Image 1: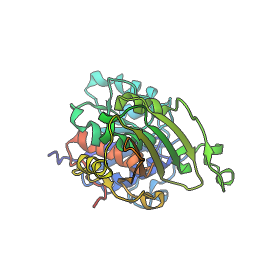
Image 2 (image 1 turned 120 degrees about the vertical axis):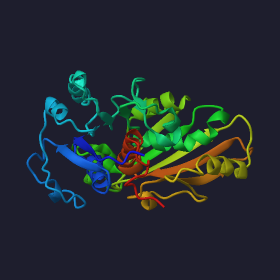
Image 3 (image 1 turned 135 degrees about the vertical axis):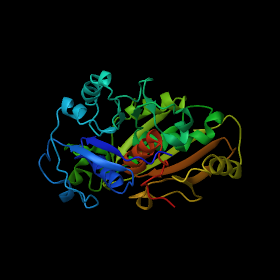
Image 4 (image 1 turned 90 degrees about the vertical axis):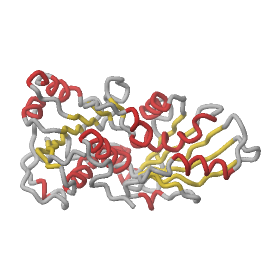
Length: 321
């Protein structure tokens, strides 16, 4: 086990996920924050924005080349989609000088790049081979894959996934999807076919899926209701047994009987799966998963991947039962 202290820098630290990751780093016994980069908050003390951080760091507005010169052991990119490549290129430009950090990208930019390890630990942990470029899965995609995986070998067709997210999933850039006034008493459907997470799950789970996302007035948390048609009938007990067995050794996946509530998963680091319902004939199953999109759907999963890459216990700094 690697007990040496390591440094970590976060680019795009103003966003919701960046703030949650800072909390996890602040309580980590072997990680020190090297820098936090945010154009909007540059110059402001980090401690004024994050109650769990008690150091002296201030937000900085770092150019791509500046990120590389800081030589942090880990660089986390918490940037909007389409913005990661410049930072990665700047780091790669100095690899010949002996600098090769672990890079964890929280955007979708490298989720379809086979040169990057796709880090959904509960499903891909065994495929980790020391890669130093890690693509963090999407929040919706994490919920979908964990909800489908135990029955993947029995699927008769594409699972239909109805997802509802809190508006924190739309980020901090103002839009209809994160405007509380427009969301009040509302449920907003969007990107109902060919959504990024639909393509992501299809690629990494290896089966086609159909995904219909919606955003709701609550701030955080996702409810994912998944309809699964099977090639052979199962009993309800057999369905539950598959999920229980698949996740028995996974502390961040809890299998329950009742349909999980999004209000119960908010601010928790695990994912809940339950509400198993069987249609007459035994070939149609409905499963419900809930996940905090900012935690297990983003920051918590990033910390799992960082710990894995650095040789620390996977759940170091992650509260769990």
